[in-house]
Length: 361
Image (cartoon, rainbow, N blue to C red; front, side):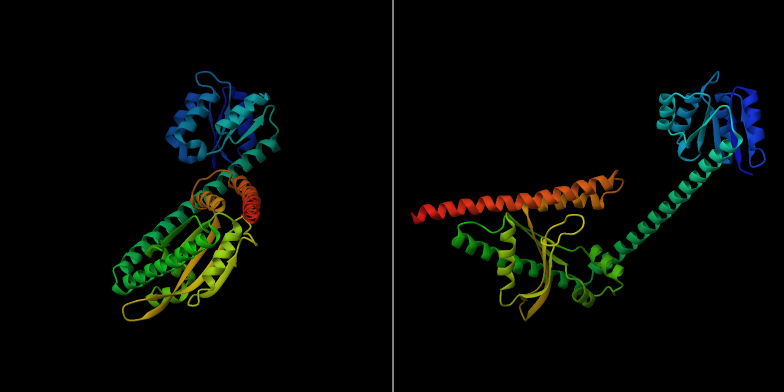
């Protein structure tokens, strides 16, 4: 039978609770807070719940709760307050300290039994869930260690390093084409179509993890065939129409091949994410051959890039509280950013038309 500790300085209250609960539990009693803490320190693992009076000599219920909280025991064992106190501020204080429930005097057998049972079941489920989470975290950590070991082996092979060199060359090729377009655009339209280019080469750890997740073998051939984002570039533009114009110019390069296009600007993701993604097959020119490599190019406005960096922190940070509310606010911000981007684009167009009109006149 599960063991319950009943703590009350009134013997009659202890006896009433013992009679109510003894058919279902092994009831142990303490006459004050000091005695209760002594018993808990010796046998805490044996108790499944504590029924605690608030007003007692030597050490009252609040002091006992504070001690249990300091020891971290309130996370492991449910504490139910047994009291004739009905003041809302007292109940709030106890709940804020971490107690599980209240059982008010005079005692009603069915209420006492149900509240004790519910509190104990809730803690059992909670502890089981925490144990599962810990086990999952241990499993993930082991998987991460395995991935790191395998990625390190991958990093040491000559074919893999040559492949990474080819992907770096792919990034340089795309950057060069974009910079040439930027120069031409600046000459023709007297402004630049993009503010900056950011590039990254996928790490061996990320490559190994993605292939393993998708169920593909971890080989150089598999990386070439199945991954499209090893070479990645992000182009930051001032206005939405610059995104589409620049993307069209890039696609029209006669030796670039468009493999896939994902327009998250016209069709945003549910979380509010907006960006234009191009998967391209890009030629690189080596000493003895011309070879086509895959690259992912993303186009965003300045404001949406800032939004994406904040959203990324929420996605990958642990122990973030109230994530649903943050996600809701991010969606609202994404919609506001889109409206602002197009409003600024309209203002720019008005300025351009005004300048052209003055030149004509």
